[in-house]
Amino acid sequence: MSLRITVCCFLVLLLAGCQGTAERPVMKIGYMNCNSEAETLARFRPLTKYLSDKLEIDFQAIPVDTQDFPERFAAGEFDFTHTNSLVYVIMRENQQLELVATEMRGNYGSRTAGAIIAKKGSGIETLQDIKGKRMIFGPQLAPSGFLAQYDLMLREGIDPEQDIAYYAIPSGSFKHEKVVYAVYFGDFDVAAAPALDLELMTKDGKITADDFVILGQSPIFPYCTFGARNDLDPALIKRFQQALVDLTDADTVDYQGETLKVLASAWIDGFETLQDSDYDYIREMAKRANMPPYQEF
Amino acid sequence: MKDRFDILLGVLLLACAVAVVGLLAGTGSQASQRDLAVDKALEQEIAYQAKVSFLERVYAPVLELRQQGQNESALLKLDELSRKYPTEAHGELLRGEILLQLGAKQKAISHLARAVRMNGDYVDRYSPLSRRELIDPLLARELADVKRQSAENPDSRPLKATLKDLYYLQGRMAGGCE
Image 1 (cartoon, rainbow over the protein chains, first blue to last red):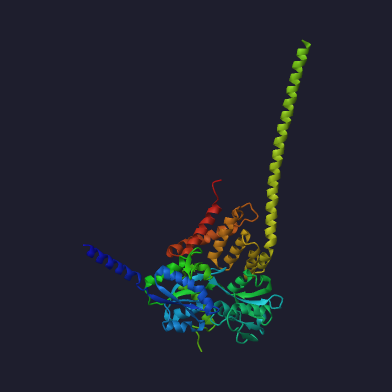
Image 2 (tube, rainbow over the protein chains, first blue to last red; image 1 turned 60 degrees about the vertical axis):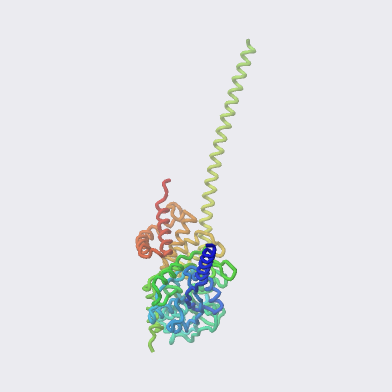
């Protein structure tokens, strides 16, 4: 009798052990680099760990260069994506990426905008004054650092390829801040600055509102966006979406021996569920500016 | 006999004198209390007017930029001022007004509700800070729409938050039972 009990206990323990060591599925989230891989991972690994804990899936955070993102996604490298809204539109048009949630940050929440700025007192007061001037843009696939301003100029009858004396894009990281400083220190006359970066730099005291004239600003459009491969289980996509939209300022994650606030560590205010049609303004801008995914040569 | 009468008369005179003094003292105290109350109301009024004029002075650059049609720069000026006055309701109110004009409705409603939570003067029709003429049409325009959107997207936390803010503004506009 006691032998039977011992064998039963052993089997129970064995089964319990098997259950405990059962491996969780592994999935990859591609995160678009803003400034550097190191910064991207530092921002998004705690959020990734939080999602892993919530969904009981081992998510891996993969930092991805913006230019490479659509191609690597098309090659099936990621299950979920976190990119700017233009790259979302590109992958939506080409690979039918599913919209999951939109990030909220700054004054406009889940939206953002692109501004064209000049230094106050430079004599440049209106958009028409930028003709023949030196201009600096953000990276080409940045909706609020390039596309919005390029489109704004076209709508104002200014051809960026013809009417500007010269335009450039800074190299390396922190491009959005660099364009602001380029105008501040007089290397360029005009800059394409994201409204969010102007806001953050002002809040940080790096610049003041009186330093610049905002010559024009685009309408607001969706900010950075989470997407999912369209062949994933819809129930999984829904759980992923719910985990994001349920996040509050108070939610924490245990990460590398520390308890971190999930949203704060990712520099995010929260998430919102938008409709794909909310991205139509980006599509219109991309068409007018002959930009991907509608580019024609 | 005469002495008794004199004593009685003296006692009566003394009682009258005490009564007169008591009456005068009582009236004086009431008057001084009334004066004090007047002083306090005056002080409150002066303090309120000083606050209104202080807010007008601090936020004048924001208003100037808005009058010039430079809402985006006005928003940056508010970001700058929020470093110095991070908990001032008037900054919240102006941010809400500007964001409303720039089309960021949800954020605008959130800031307007926060401003009213911090300072009820914005829904007081007799206050120089009153913004009833802004909030009333906003409620008429947005409440039904946000209610419908929230019903269509029951998992959307931001829409729920916006709806809650609108209901709060509606409640404050209606006022209490006082």
